[in-house]
Image: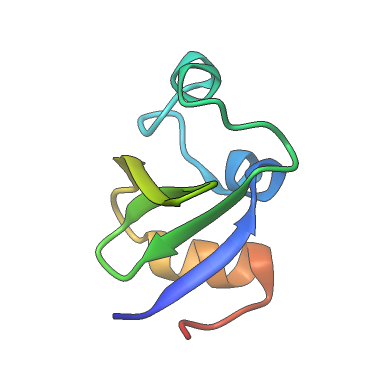
Length: 75
């Protein structure tokens, strides 16, 4: 399974209005410096001290949007 990792700040810039909102990110304890990753299915995972937590997902054409925002490809 491939992932693209980024910070919470990058995630905020890449998300559309109909995906997670700011209160969802605050509740999930995602700050601008939090490490997150997106898998090829659009699941958003947050790095925690002992692993990863899924906090939601992206919809509709997110693949190119995430690559464009991060400059990274699926690894």
